Amino acid sequence: MILEVKDLKTYFFTDKGVNKAVDGVSFGLKKSQTLCIVGESGSGKSITSLSILGLIEKPGKIVGGSIQFLGQDLLQLKEKQMQKEIRGKKIGMIFQEPMTSLNPSYTVGFQINEVLKIHHPSLNKKERLERVVYELERVGIPHAGDKYHEYPFNLSGGQRQRVMIAMAMVCEPEILIADEPTTALDVTIQAQILELMKELQQKKGTSILFITHDLGVVAQIADEVVVMYKGHVVEQANAKELFADPRHPYTKALLSAIPKPGKEYRKKRLETVDENVDYLSFPKELR
Image 1 (tube, rainbow, N blue to C red):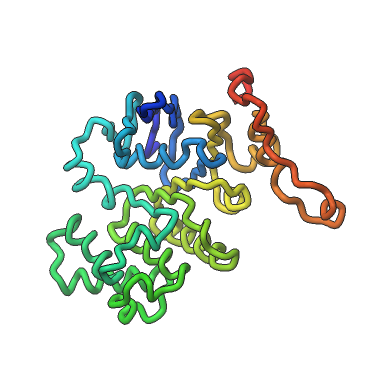
Image 2 (cartoon, rainbow, N blue to C red; image 1 turned 45 degrees about the vertical axis):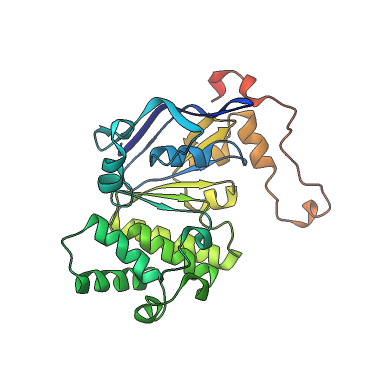
């Protein structure tokens, strides 16, 4: 197991009380595996990924649990250690919206170059340039040498997301965390990005932690699935088993809400997850 999260608790302390965004989450990620964390907005899946990287800001705080990565507990590392040894180097991150994740004041090449300067200071300027151009080519950016000097706003949405993948992969991390990386893209570009991530994983053996609310995406890429609801893991299973035989009522509700192909379904109303049901009240045997 390359990453093991045990009983993780991340709370937000506000004037209105304590929001238990992540409340006792546990799961494991194996080498070269794709694990998808799925759930509705507000289920705690993104906060879980940010907790792994130590990116929780006030009023949020990790109040319990452990995050074991390659034999060390990330929660015991100081911020400088996380910056220098883990974040961006051994664990890469692709954020949901590249336009807000990329700095509009700097070229895309400069921004990827900075990642190498921080984590591989022994590389000289020429070596860094060659590495960045190679990485841009690897993720399918046409005319990578020219695109190196472009600003984010001059690129399409799909190209910006490819740049984010290049930035996350340039140090060849052990784990790639992708937080809703295809949400803002059209279906064609989405399929290309997913295929690109699978290719990179096969070539480098990277483990992927994929955060999404889209079960269609999960069906395409997941080996293992973690289903989250209100800060809790309600079910974890092999992807094929989960789609074929979901055990928890919340998982069943999510799957039933997926639009179905066929003429017989065209005039039928889409099912929704019943917000009046407390899915945490079901016995733990179902999880």
